[in-house]
Every structure is written in structure tokens, then in C-alpha cells.
Length: 595
Image 1 (spheres, one colour):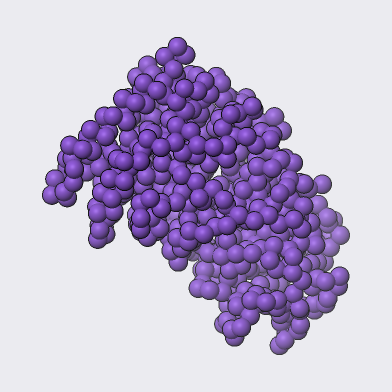
Image 2 (image 1 turned 135 degrees about the horizontal axis):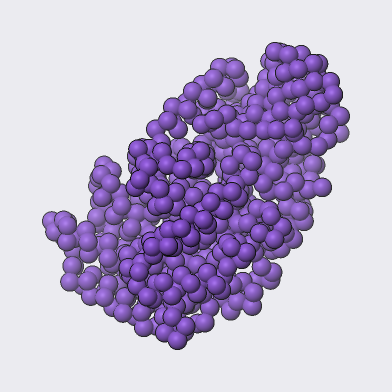
């Protein structure tokens, strides 16, 4: 039986991350970066595409229990067997350019024979490396990649069926530590780490970091776990935050809506920045702001919706036909063709993020205002264009209402900045005129007076969950009848057993992709936010309680959820979902409980 998405946990070093199943198998790991080729790709194929399982010999099923150590990204997985019990502790210590995956096996009770099966396959499971033994290490090399495996104390390993195996027995208190280290094959082996010291340091560092969280309200554990997850999705060398650690986890089992999310989206910027700042993580917020500035620098006409970890712009989309897909969901894709789409909303999101950074007191950077002026001035002559919209639909450009609302946001934030700081300089009257014109057009062309709701795009009858952001960004007050009517209409039309789809993918005139998808989790959080802002706090809290209950056993959320099957869908763990959880908790409880 194929694992479910929620069967996985992650460990990471803020450069990449490994997905580990309940059965003790590392089924996904890209080295050395989130967007590098995977050396373990069983997640999207089968065992021959690479994995590393450590578990009691003869036990094929899942563990007895597992949990992160409180306040950390250190994972403990335990098995109870007839012979005794063991614990496997997984972590990825932080160090530059030499990712390490540490797996420490500890005997808890009785005497248990443990088996390790390591099957390395570089380039997304397509390349079998050459493996040799050197100075007590197993060394696997293929092209640019080199991986070293060692154990402390040393255990006997042997090759079998193009894999490296080991068997050993542990008694109570006995520990065997494995360290898997990547480095470029043309360079000398990096210095070895002490796995036990690395564990102590990781626990101490993570707990010091989580202790800084200023939120003290209900569901603090879920909020802290979400913040840890956002930290784990951060590429520390640049400050960029990837949308997820994975590619091609399906939005519908067996479907084709399988996309690569190992990149950084501008659409996440304001919500991410707000969550980090509100919880006291100004250093991380500043790093994200600075990544944003570097990424968007250049011609405003060439603003992309997403970028690579360091701000790369070429993310060419390819299909990997040798991978059978998660639970048979093909195609498996790397890269993302949506990078070339026009999405006017990103201009508003960038302007909103930089306005928030200024209000929050982040240290100013040279030329930020010059960049903002350039973005708004470009929008003045281009905002009337149709675009592909927030959800990156591949069915052609439309006059999406959310895109136009975010154009209004861009103009509004520019006007407000100049009103507060006239010394900055700019065309205040021209920007005010643009703001008023956009607002008037959206209310005339994007609102269906007969139904009492804003629509997905001008003249359509379809709805979109992004309309719930209208009060959040200040376009209209939350108690405006047009807003409350939109909340009720979106909830009625896009509701899916109490949760919310982002739009109707069934017979959609803008989607043009076969099949459907699950409830989009961040949209459900947006619904809770909108209900609360409209004064319907009891409904908002009831929805939030349900959403928090959807996290898996270690507190992680994917992109979507299938309320019929009761399972998670889409790439995992998903930054947008965890950002939604944090921001909704802050909205519902922050004023009364935050420290």
C-alpha cells in the first residue's frame, strides 16, 4: 500500500529537507538544495528510485509512535517489537555546503536487531552511483554528486541488489549513529561532524529559536510548529522561503495537477512577513524582505511571480517519465512553466510587503522607494491588461478581480507612503487618480449586483476564494454589504464539507485542466479571517478549530485536503497553509493573548 502524504515528517538544515515516512524510510531528499535533483525519490516512484530505511529487522509496517522533540525539528521514531523497543532520531545539522543527514539508533528495551537499507539514486532516481569502500566509509559517486556514509561505532555494511545494507543489534542505552554527507564529487571530503554533539546543538538551537515566539494564545503548539516549518522551508544563504519541499504531489489522486513548488512565490510575501513580524522574528522577516528586494530588482515589466532560491528567473518545466508519480499520479514535473505568466497581483503584494516592512521598523535599504515608484508607474500604464491571476490558471488571460484589487493595493500603499513621508517624492495626484479609477472599475465590472457578490473575473458568474481578501487588504470595510454578500456566496458555492475550494475546477472556463482538486487550506483560513473581521467570530473560531485538527500527527499541513477521504493533498509541507494557520490564530486570539 502506498503511503499517504500525511504519513511523512520532515527534517532539514535550512538548505534542503528530507521527508521521512512512518515506516522509517527517507523517501525524498534533494541535495544540496531544495531544488536540486533528488537522491531519494521513492516518494514519486518506487523503492528502486532511491530511499533509506532504518527499522527493526522483519518489521515492514509503520512505527509504533513518532514525534518531534518539543520546540525542535528533531524527529524521534519508535518501534515496539516482541524482542524489545528502539528509537531512531533524525536530524539535519546546519553547516555550509555540506548537508548531513544524521540518523541515530538507540536501544530502549530488550535486544532488537535493526536493518538499514540505503539505496542511492541521483538525478531524481535515474542514476545508479558507483559505490566503493574508503577508510571505513561507503562512498557513492556519479557525475557532480558524491555521498559519504559512515557509522559510529562502525557497523558492517555490504552491497546487495544495488543497495548498501547493514544489520546490528542494540540493547538498552546502546546507540549507533549514521551520518550521510553530500559534497561535490570534485572536491575533498568535508570535515566529519560528531553526530551526538550535532544532536545536542540542534535541540538547543531550535529551542532557543522557538522561545522567541511572542504568541501565547490558544493552540500555541500548532502556531510554533507552523513557524518551525516556515523556518525549515527557508533557504538560509539567501533568506528565500520555498512554497514546499516537494514537487508533483497531486492535488487529486491519479490526476495531472502536479506542480513543482520548490521555489519562492511573491504572492506569499506579505502574509509571510506579517506572520514573522507579529511573532517576533524580525531577523527572519528582514532576510525575507531583502530576498524580495534582490529578486524583483530590474525592469518592472519583467517582474516574475516566482523565483529560484537565490532569485533565479529561469525555471524551465520538464517532465520525468521514468517516475510513476505519487500513487500513480503523473506527470512528474520539475521546474514550473507558470514563471512566465503575467500576474498583476504580484505588484500589489510587493508594494504591500515593503509598506509593512517600513511600518514595522525594519532597517531601511537604499533605493527601496525608487523601486516602488518604478513599479507603480509601470502599473499606471499596464493595469488594464488581462492576466493569468493568482492561481496560475493555464486557460488564458482574464480580467481577474483579485488582480485588480491588488493593483489598487499597489496604488494605495504608494499614496499612503507619500502622504506620511512627502519627502520621498512621487506623483501623489496621479497615484490617487489611479487608485480611484481602479476601485471604481472593480466595483462596477467585478461585482454582480443581482447575486450580491464580487466575481472571479469581470462579467463572470464564477466565484473565487481570493475575493475573501478584499477586506483584509483594505479595499472595502469588512462590514460592507458587498463584502458580507461575497463571504456568504463564496462559502455557499465553493464550500466542500465545511472547507473551501479556491475556485470551481469543474467545467471551469479558466482552468481547462481535467479532473478536480481538494479543499485549499489557506482559502479556508481566509474564510475564518473574513468571518472574524465581519463580526462572526464564533463561526470563525469553529472553522479554525477544525482546520487545526487537520494537521498530521507531527503538526504538518499540505496544500489541500480531501474531506471525503480524510487525507491531505498537494505539495508538502506547504508554507501557505502554515502561514494561514499562524495569521488566523493571530487574528482570532492575538490581541487578547499575545505576549
